[in-house]
Amino acid sequence: MTRRRKKHRPDEIVAKLRDADAMLNAGKILAAVLRALEVSDSTLERWRAQFSRMKCEQAKMLKHLSEGNW
Image 1 (tube, one colour):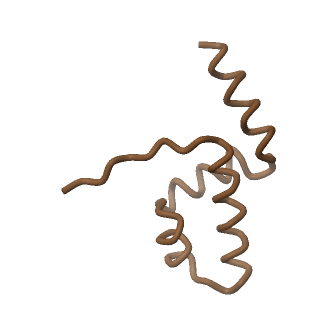
Image 2: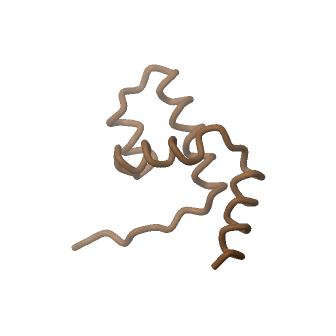
């Protein structure tokens, strides 16, 4: 049985990145953080590259602007 892929909204991504940073700063190991967030290591790194400095409002605006360009 395969898992369905979940399409995360930009504000969810920013929140998960904050949660990941908080868990890692609290001393959790990376594998436990990835399990808790239900994402892979590569997904987390890709999100960090794209959304690391954004706030939720900025991520929503980015998504809105990118949808308008298509």
